[in-house]
Image (cartoon, rainbow, N blue to C red):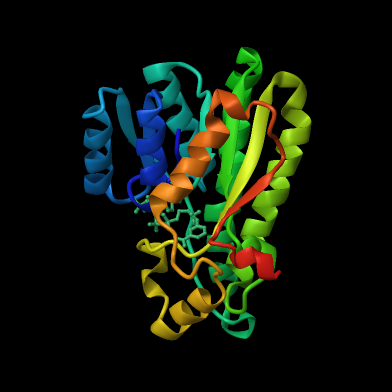
Length: 241
Ligand code: NAP
């Protein structure tokens, strides 16, 4: 199950995990047409796939999402907490609603989905959780107090999950992508893009496929001895920190 996988990074992760042989639960909040396209591309690989509308910041939606996933394929073995959003503003201009919306979408959702997935994983004594954090969670960017705080918190959630679940053979890791062109980053202006590029040693932006490859590795049998780690997929941006 990949939350927020109708487009962008989530969609690329879903496709990559399907290539590795997983049956896939696509989740989206509003864009049903994009989710159906993502589903069709996965089915074209010969994998089974369902697309489920659910706002993962809401507990009742998460309950329904996991019920539908379990009905289709059995307990969720791999969870990628990817759904995320931004509402960038300076703190003095940021409303409580801006803060809470981002925290709910990025952090509350990851907590709810992790909790829902763990029951089945504990029973199976196997599980993989990958949380999509961000370099923003490591660096505290100006204009992203809500987003950066949510991503820092996701990193801590990742570590707590790793500690609590290690005895059950469930791994929990985070990815911290740098700047990846998607709809989320389409609002970033030219000056900000140049600033990102200037601070990226590899001197280019990343691709959704590059993030997906790292996620697929962390979900693979070969990564069974890796837990509680944060892997930056950022062209070296975080070397500066
Ligand atoms: P994106 O293109 O905007 O895609 C976001 C996805 O999340 C969409 O499928 C959207 O579905 C879904 N979504 C949003 N809110 C949701 C909710 N409440 N419930 C269910 N689904 C929801 O974003 P992206 O760039 O691929 O980002 C994916 C993740 O990577 C996010 O966590 C983001 O913070 C993180 N990240 C991105 C970058 C970057 O540079 N792009 C860098 C670091 C980290 P609908 O369209 O149907 O609403």
